[in-house]
Length: 448
Image 1 (tube, rainbow, N blue to C red):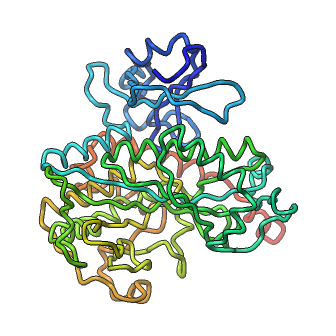
Image 2: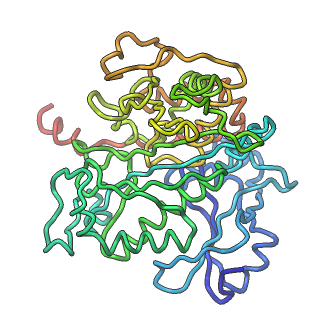
């Protein structure tokens, strides 16, 4: 093992909201944990966002709040270089006591979809692109976002959009240098870094890997390391979908292709248009996009990305080399023909985003669905002519209702997952709807 036996380590699973749940343990326990795993209540994976039990999910009193077994998913513990004292981390996923996969574990949900591809002799090759905001170090304490002061930029505070700016990255070189170093240590394949549309907003692309579960692992580790390094250097970082009301939101775009058993890209027909299999996948993605919206936009704030004039799509559409559509076929050499899914926010659980995308694509492939004509030009201009079935729910409650009733998602992602996830979302909605916001007091208290 790469880990030092004396180091403390965090063993964690990823709950349905993408939050890390687990235990900090002494290094002396590492070898036993790698061999036997750790027990945690299965209800932990079904917590609401704030870590409260969700009694409606059937995992608490009905089961006696029984344990599952969390087994490490990698052979070695992974160093946590930004920690104040030496520490490692162990990523795990949950199994039932009898050894069967626990259906509400998001990594197990993705594993089930990947297995269905494998049964067809296909391997998804996946890459993620994650956007985040770097903020002033006091932002988490004040619970309000504020652009950072560029210590290497003569104390200047970022305040304006400066998309694709090299100067912004120069002024934050220590931060990005450490991000790259830690990505290398943790085998997270970080590629291009760009400054995005908001002040202090950046995007880092991760390279393609022929293993969707590994791609999900890498996205989880990437989000943790960005936030950890930001705190270490006196900043804050957030993957919140819309931290600034009038600035660009944080998205998570997913690129994928499919390889057959000979290692050939089944989307490649030697030309720009791609194969029938690719179009079947596109049609499946369009058909299931509204059903899966709750996994792409899981929180109340998530839906603030989906506004008129924003880059986030509000209906299922596709096109070639067109960034206004939900499903883009990027320009590339034919051998690299792939699909880019442009709906999810960076606040979403990467495993569930990948499971919904790949499940939708598989549904289209297995049923040989055909998409409508690809859109040329501004997709937003054609909204009025769109089929009602392709309009995406842009309210949290509506997305939950559609998700809960989806027979396709129940087939491809599992009924246990649908039940547990939708119960968590309903509880979160009740909690937030019970709160009276500051703007309500400011608007109404002295006037009504």
